[in-house]
Image 1: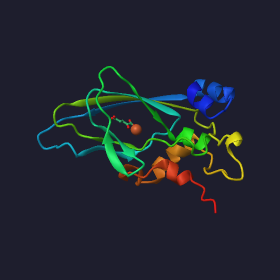
Image 2: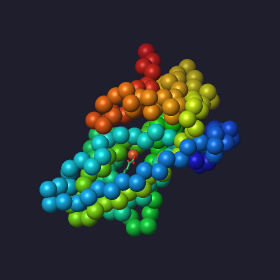
Image 3: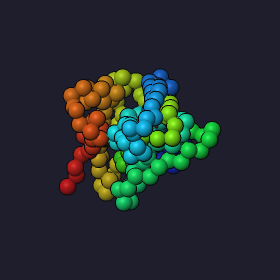
Length: 177
Ligand SMILES: O=C(O)CCC(=O)C(=O)O
Ligand SMILES: [Fe+2]
C-alpha cells in the first residue's frame, strides 16, 4: 500500500491509520468440479472488489482478469505458493482513476476442485473514501463520488445487477463534460 501511495505522490499517513482501524474481509470459495461443468462455466461473475487491495490465494487455475486494452479475458496462471494482489474500487476513487480496480471473474476448472481465499482490506463501515485533492485539477476533475462500506452494502441489497456482472465503481462515476 505504501508503494501505491508513493507512486501517486501522496503522503497519506492518515489513510494508513484508517486502514489499520478498518475492515478485513476474508472470503473462502470452493468451486467443485464435475463432469457436467466445463472450463468456461462461470463460477463467480465479473466484478471488482470493494476495498483498497485484495490479496488472493488460488489452489489451481480459474481466476481471469479483463484486459482493458481489448476487453478479452486472461487467465491468471497458477503459480505455486504465490499470492495475487488486486487493486480494488477504493484505490480507483482515491487515485481519481489513475489506478483502475481489477475486473475479474472465476471459471470452473474441470481438472480440480478449486479453493480460493481472498482477503479484502478496506476502511471501516462509515469511513468515507474520498478522491485525494492532490490528484484533482482543471484537467482532472473529481471523477468519483465518495463512498463507504455501508453504502456499498446498501447498493448490494438494492440491486440484482451485481450478480450479473455490474461493477459498483460504475455507480460512483461522475460524468464531467
Ligand atoms: O475465487 C477467486 O479466485 C476469486 C474470488 C473473488 O473474486 C472474491 O471473493 O471476491
Ligand atoms: Fe473478487
